[in-house]
Amino acid sequence: MDKHVGLDENLAREMFIEFKSLMPSVISQIKSQLPNYHPLHISDAIFNGLAKQAKKIPDF
Image (tube, rainbow, N blue to C red):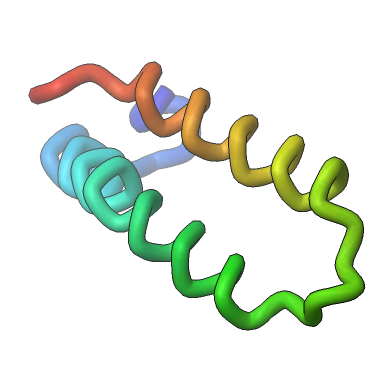
């Protein structure tokens, strides 16, 4: 995919590695900022989806 959008392969790999490594802390940080009345079924679905997609990124 990197070649299709004009990215250097190494840069694309680094971006994916960074995305995967930061996702748990980003999710945690955003969860802590949500108001108490925020519907958990909505945020949980989003956060679980993000975490699931991050896990699909291979360990380069």
